[in-house]
Length: 153
Image (cartoon, rainbow, N blue to C red; front, side, top):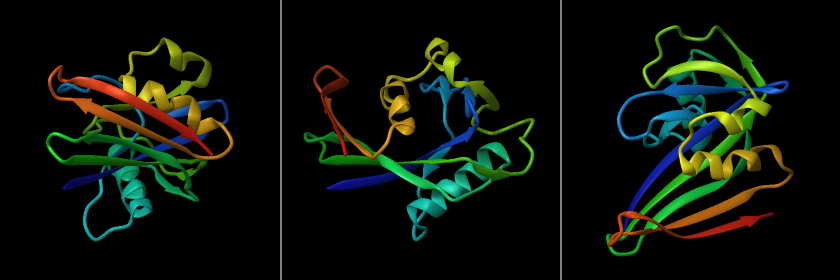
């Protein structure tokens, strides 16, 4: 079994959220800050580090919102993305960020933005009570998402 761990941290300021306008590789569109978890750091530590690296902001008081995972039974792979939200931050946004320009976006404008399916699917769940678990089974034959299971608690 091959496991890979990632984090995402939604940073909220009133009715706005901080997103990265990512325009490189196959993952173009607006995304929240996040990235790979480096061993032996915790998932929360990874989320805090990634926000700092990608936006320049120091975040604290992260609230765990849920798990988003891709499973590929044929390749025996599992990609797990731990999702957080916070409204506690300090610092100044980076002008030239490595993963895309950080921008504050009004929540009501988010549906109009280009966004990856995986981000769009879980975006509203960050702002609901409770936590979520989304599992996506990858279809190797079609090279696309297969069965999607969403659970809310």
